[in-house]
Length: 356
Image 1: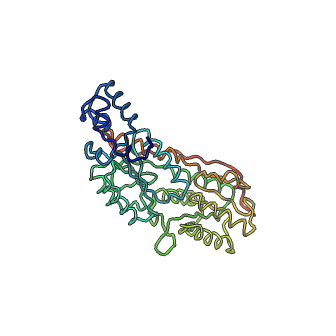
Image 2: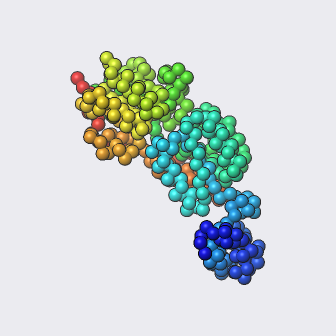
Image 3: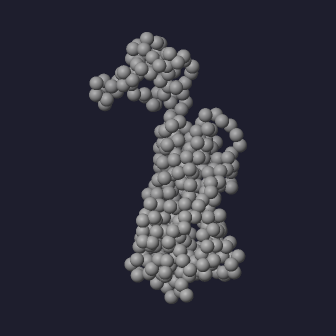
């Protein structure tokens, strides 16, 4: 019988029960994964279902068990390798636990995120993993939690309410790389992020809605203050949300009379565009400009020179978030977990002493 033939799709629980020689209710318990049956009965029903190539009716099963067997995930930018790798961690854990993942990309827009969560709740997902676009705007996340679905925040926490959260130690990482640059004599250090403000100018970390980036900028500014560097807020550039915007901002910085001697890219997509602009302008890395990027993307190790990066535990972020969610779904009740995973600076060849 062809797998997708009309005959296959019409196989019912009753057909499986008849072939297995059990009642329809017993077959339904085995196929739906609920209730209690003996190992012998489970094996007989499973064999019958396999022989008939039975395909479960997910809608009917969800009506019976109250579970859809799906987890909803909302992330900021699926084109960013960071989120792609985090999704791999989520899906690997979810698949092992018997869940399918439904992914929606918010484009780092809070309204799009709210619409995405409404859609996922309407589809009756069993739980949610969300990387909030705007941590100060969590009303919709509260509603999702009140709906009874477990919720885990990925990469970005929220002090507004207590919920399972998995983040990386971003501030510590930013402090480490900034301290390294300052020690090498850099004073004109730029920090470039996709986060933006209404007038596209940075004034204070409170302007940044994305907590992971805010913590990095706080760490950057803290080390600069400790080193006696004044006005470093002026070296934080926002709005590098697309390759085109990044190239424009980077070119303006690097063609200015007082160009930076070092740039910290807040993600690998930004880092790649800065690298390209340097090549186009004839600037050498690290002779003219030291470059550091968050996220150990594949390209960073094969360029000339290879790029010094902050290696974030991206796969583990997704894996841990999914594991916390599955534990909640399996009825493991506990206080909200706040997991902070360590980062690592990978020294390569894109950082050197500041040019004289």
